[in-house]
Length: 482
Image 1 (tube, rainbow, N blue to C red):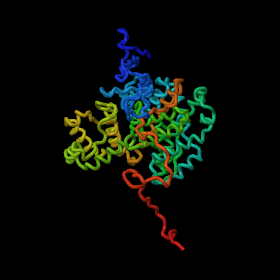
Image 2 (image 1 turned 180 degrees about the vertical axis):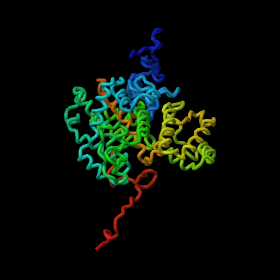
Image 3 (image 1 turned 90 degrees about the vertical axis):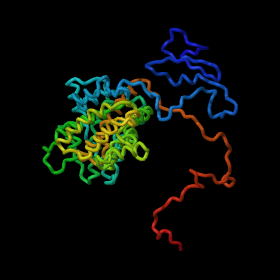
Image 4 (image 1 turned 90 degrees about the horizontal axis):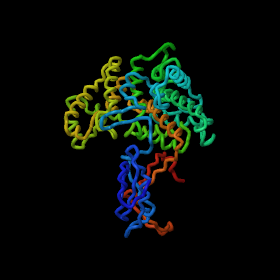
C-alpha cells in the first residue's frame, strides 16, 4: 500500500487515489478483484477538529461505516457467485439451472464443500457415509422429546444442534486444541458427514414432536430427501413403505436451490462464529438462529399469509394499490442482491407443477399468478426491480405438500447446512482465519463521572419515567398478608 503526495504514477491503473481534505494527504490503494481493503483508510489520520469529540478517534485513522454490510465484503470465496444485475447464480462455476436439472442435493453438497463434482466412486462413498450418519444419540433424542408439542420447529432444530457438540467432545476445539481441524482433516470430514446426515433426522424429530408422534428411525437405503419424508410420515405401514418418488425429487430440487447463496445473513453468521474456532455444531446452531428470523427464513411463510389475506384474484388490484400507498407489504418480490428475476424462481415454478400433479393444484396458485402478472405489468414495481424471488413459489409448494407454515424455515435450513459447512471448511482451510471483530462508530455520551445513588435524579427510559411495571401472574393466595 503506497502512500503518495499526490497523483499516482501513470502506470498505476489498478489503484484508487484518496485525498483527505482535512490534511491534504493522499493515499494510493491497490484494487484487487474490484475491491479495496478497508484497513487502508486507517492511514488517513488527522488531528481533532475544533469542538470534535475525542470518541471519534480521529488521530488513529479513518473508519469505514457500512450499516448492515450493504457494500462490504467480509471474505474472499471460491464457492458461490451471484450476478444480481443479470439474475445469475452459480456454484463453483456451475449454473444453478444445470445443477437443478442434472444433479442431486448430495452431489451439489459435495461440490460446494470440496470444490469439484465427485466421481462415481467418490459419490457412492459420500452418499453411504452421510446416510449411515443419520442416527442421533438416544440422550439427544431424549432432549428433543422433552420439547413442548407447540414449540416452533426451528427452536427445536437449533436447540438440538446446540446440544450436539456435547455428544462429540473429540470434535470440540475448546477441548482438543484450536488447531484441531487444521491438523486433522479426517476429523473435519467426519463432522461434515455427521452434520449433513443428522440434519434431516433432527428436522423430522421436530416435526414428529409437533404432531405428537413417536420418532421414526432413519433408513440408509433411501435417498436423502426420501429418508426425510419417510421419518416425517411413516406410521404403521410396513418397512417397505416409501414416500412418493416424485415428491422426493421435487424436494431434492428445492434443496439444491437452497443449498447456498453466498454471504446471506445466516451464512455470514456461520463464518463469523466459526472464526472463533468453536465447534461446527455450535456454528450451525448460530447460523440456524439467524435464519430463524422472519426477515430471512420466514419469507416464504409470509408469502402464504399474504396470498391467503388477498383471498381471491379479484382482490389483487386493490391489494397492489394498498402496497403502493404503503398500507400493505408485498412479500416474495425483490431481493437484497438480485436486481432482475431470481434465477431460482424460474426453476422452482417448474417444480410446483411437478408437485401439483401429485398433491393437487394449490388453490392459492391462481392468486399468486395473478399477483405476479399484475406486478410485472406495473411500472411502479418493475422500476423498483421488484421481481418474484425463490420464496414466492417455494411456500406454495410446501403448502401443497402439506407442511405446516412454521415448518417452512426448517425446510430452508436443512439444505442450507451444506453451504454453511462449505464456508466453514473454506475459512479453516485458507490458513488465514482471524477472529471476526467489527469496529463501531461511537456516538454515545462523552466521559462523565460516577454519581452516588442518593444524589441521582430520575431519567427517562425509552421516553418514560422509569420501567413499566412488569406483570407477574401469581395467585392472590401468595399475596395474603398475616
